[in-house]
Image (cartoon, rainbow, N blue to C red; front, side):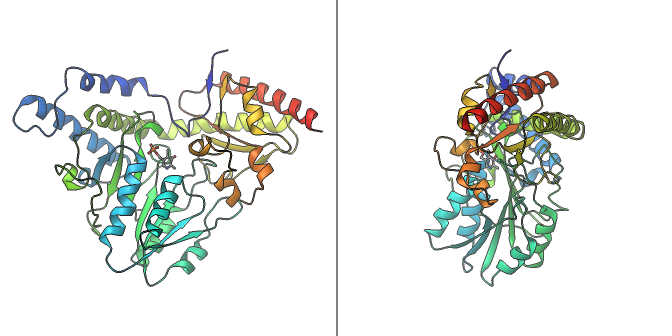
Length: 383
Ligand SMILES: *Cc1c(COP(=O)(O)O)cnc(C)c1O
């Protein structure tokens, strides 16, 4: 058996069709999109324009509202720091305990720069309590940032409802959509979204590329740039555009838009097969996070009285993750699982399975067999 990749929330393999689209821009179409005086530049600029449209189409935005960045982390930096820098009076931001570290670390930075941040708890299923959000809004609140689909537990927040609350209270509404773009429908108009961040490499595109959606009307959101030098991207993000990556991002968005409906059904069938297979052979396993409001490709399971690291070490041919990939270098229990009420032991006994576009039924069957065998072996030792 070859290696099996089941860590699609950490990153996704490049879709071969995306690579094909990128290749010319890594070879003979090498122009700088900002070169206005010759055909090499025009060719690059045209490719970027097409990509901008493909990205906008996926989230019902207009191309003028798309800013290309190096990825979700940079987009979130621009969205949050850029809004904070623009805001002259108000000082209060609302976000949640289960956010990605990108948001949490930026909020901490802003706290050190004189802003106040409320980190709201979530319910034990990972969902936001809308009443708590309404109660947390203060006179000086200007921004709400919400993780659309959680990278660890896949839980999907009610973005349209939150958007409505933000609209009624004149708050800027940012969503971290790194896990949701291309996987579930997003409509920035219907959901009242003002700012939206995501990365290409979570949707089978290249690493080091992403976008920020910035609403330009109803209402027009103002942002202060954080990277200066040349005025690219309407001055919001200077620096020569990575045309090959941007072309890849555009293509990845186009493909996701086309496949989304069928793919989420196909992936949720694989996910259900995996869950049922594990459930039938492993007593009292526990699912972390809501099963009803969840990304098709995510399963996060606690195998009580085991250690996820030891389990994963004994199945090196299957790529999985314990907690969030971004914190897997440290042995801290996941802040997300902690926010759901899991204790240290439960957190260290949890494994994330991330199913994606290129996984097969055979891979899932092999994974069930191997996980069942390994977990039950470790449990016998533990008892
Ligand atoms: C991956 C991810 C990010 C960061 O994306 P980068 O590509 O590493 O910048 C932010 N938020 C969520 C939810 C993610 O899954």
